[in-house]
Image (cartoon, rainbow, N blue to C red; front, side):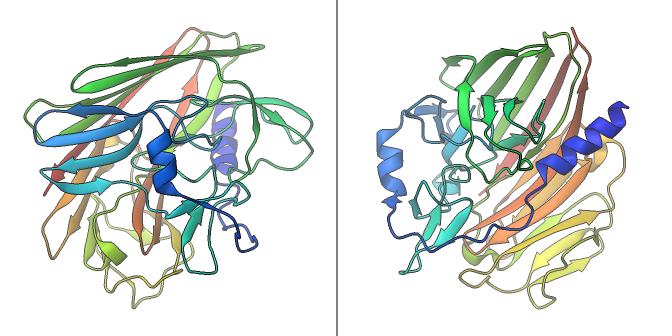
Length: 344
């Protein structure tokens, strides 16, 4: 039964794979305005300097799609930038992202985020009027009988209780929330390893309710490594097979364990496809992304098995999206960790 629920969570999390059709935005604001008005925390270990936006009513990220804890608006290693806004402007009526009449990339409130940001599949969602939960966001209202759509902005009825504890090299975020039988404490720690080019993201989710918590979570990994992504190479521990929506062969080449971008992506070009080949152990959560021309990049290691793996790109950002499963009975907790090692 729990396996079926977990699979349902995966389907819900990916229910809106295709980008929604939407009109050209006519009124928008520059992302610089959002960065200037939102609170920000700065952490550093010497080689790395990162800026992190805490949750709140005036936060940098105010959407209901992604976990609002620990949004990295900038991360630099010895001056080279890996994370930052991939969009030029924002507009409330945009569902995902779109382009205005001048070609500027305009993101909506639920996609306007940056860095290694995570999305949990919803809890207690039914296609009828009522309330449901997104971990890292809060209790949301379903206003009609439409299926769940992560591009849609939902009303936050209760954001739960957040505490934020910063230090020189890290920040701890804690959210507690209860909706009927569903209740949890969610802790997320971002910390820089002293004197090393490493970022560690640690999680602890405790089921404090009387109902099982069964969901999935993936990291969108909005990486800004190479403009246009040309020459970007992604290597996994396993031979790759493209499962859905194969990209144009003049753009992507798959050879064994490595995926290579052969040319710069064009303006407005978009790819999103699933790959398979991973096994059922955490050993396959070991992803190396490199700039083949410049040599810089990042290695991402997780301590959980991958359950689903998507590749997304436009010309301004590249994303490897590994999913993991969460199945928690009442009173139990789950811990998981991602380790990012950067090379300039």
